[in-house]
Image 1 (tube, helix red, strand yellow):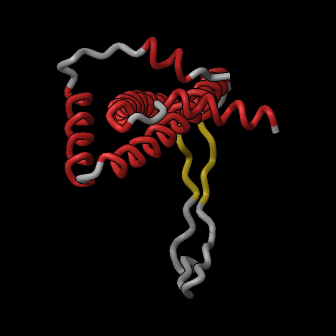
Image 2: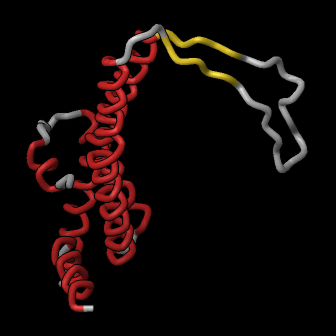
Length: 166
């Protein structure tokens, strides 16, 4: 099982990280646009939850699956996998039936390179989501202190306890 907190603890970020600075600026802009601490707090709570789920999904599902695919590709023999196009009918009355039928051979090395590139993109996305999570939790907790409300971790723990009791 993928542990989001462990991933966040292992994340290496410097204070002058450009991506972190952009995310902090976006959080400041959200606070300015909301012009209400309660509204901004709710927005940051929602963002933190969404980013937490996304980091968990990427780390527990998408990225491991892509590494497994890469391992399979590297272990397989042969030159490539056949890819074909199919006729698609749309709800809106359009179809690609008149388009020429495509039957392309994708080379093994190209498939490996594409998968490696996709893994790199997913890992970058996971890092960005983790930074967004950390900033959203920080902003939520600061607003919670100001409003004398529960912090993000406390709310999550209380919800888990209620689910366990049910």
